[in-house]
Length: 241
Image (cartoon, rainbow, N blue to C red; front, side, top):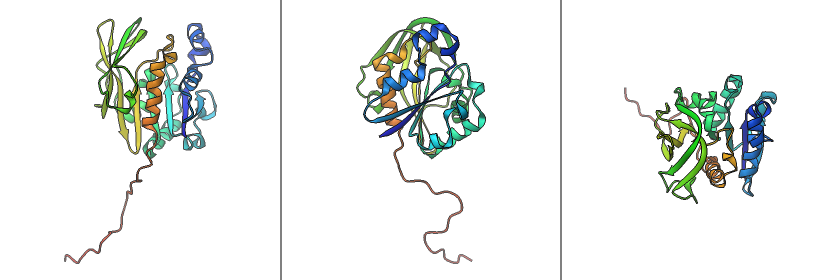
């Protein structure tokens, strides 16, 4: 059983009727219901909960954390960001969605500005699978078409991804690296672009399939734990004097 926590700042849905009409219970609830299956144990957490819902105990019992944020990036406590970073280093998977590219945790883990071009015009997005052998692309067609999405365009200021799974083309002509993976410490990170709050992207079965695949890919592998710091020799060291 993979333990998943879906984190959403849950601000737009409370103050913007257009967003509330699409996600009346919040983006986190739509995602939690959308990815639910017999292999996942899914919980949710939001910005305004104590410790943003990301207590040490909650994170210790999370295999994969899914992150959606936008207007409340600066409201996330740096102590919680460092706590999440530590858990990623220890092996927790992290899936960062859409405008989470500007979250404190993603920028901290990437070490770059994570800036990009954007335009909100409700245009068509065609999400191309450029690495069909990757586990995150399992069961998908060669492309996914979203009739209405926000445009993100290059240049995306991130480190070169360890793996590139999806590239988007937009009706206005831009392209974007929309599905990128990274390794940090023992943890695996998947950035996935689609998911603007005013469009029903997180009800799309193919988008939910990508996120489910991402959870399975990012889940801890329980590989050997590295040993660091001062270390005694494994074999006798002869006198070299």
